[in-house]
Image 1 (tube, rainbow, N blue to C red):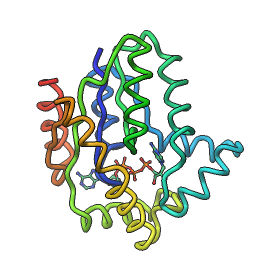
Image 2 (spheres, rainbow, N blue to C red; image 1 turned 180 degrees about the vertical axis):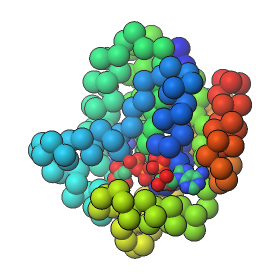
Image 3 (cartoon, protein in one colour; image 1 turned 90 degrees about the vertical axis):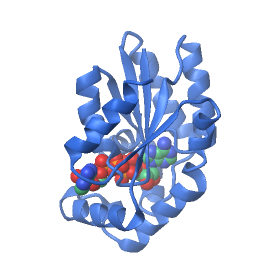
Length: 190
Ligand code: B4P
């Protein structure tokens, strides 16, 4: 089973590359951002709470996203594997993922990180904001908050996988196809 954690700051291209990776490796794509946006669109209580935090560029509580991932993993027991996109975003989420995969008789195969500088991230997100309708994509200060949340709470997640010898990184700037080729080369070593 291939269980891939695709990692990187907001706007690094995790969603873009996940769509390609899932086709090539026949994986189930689990994006916590997409799952939360579905809850918001459906107007659920969870979605309403999440929206307040997402509109400030803050992370949603760990137990909420861990519960969503747990349900999806249990519902897809026959999958060839998973691509986790935007999850885990805290060390507590990474520890919970280890436990829930172990209960299902499997483990994270590796983390691959996309490296992109903040100026490029900001430009990409603002560009997407022109058409995405996402309220967290429109404002430079809000994007800065998201990057700060990433630096303080999410970047340490890389150390969790470095400690398990499961960490790789690739340059995330350039043509989407070239980045995809670099990602596949890294995935093929896992
Ligand atoms: P996400 O939905 O995960 O949003 P993201 O980080 O902006 O997305 P991504 O990196 O996938 O960027 P994309 O491919 O779209 O999270 C949103 C919010 O949800 C968070 O701020 C948080 O509040 C909450 N949340 C989600 N998961 C959580 C968790 N686990 N715990 C707590 N809270 C959580 O790329 C961005 C843009 O760049 C696109 O427009 C794309 O077209 C463009 N692009 C991609 N590759 C490019 C390239 N090579 N060159 C030029 N442009 C490129």
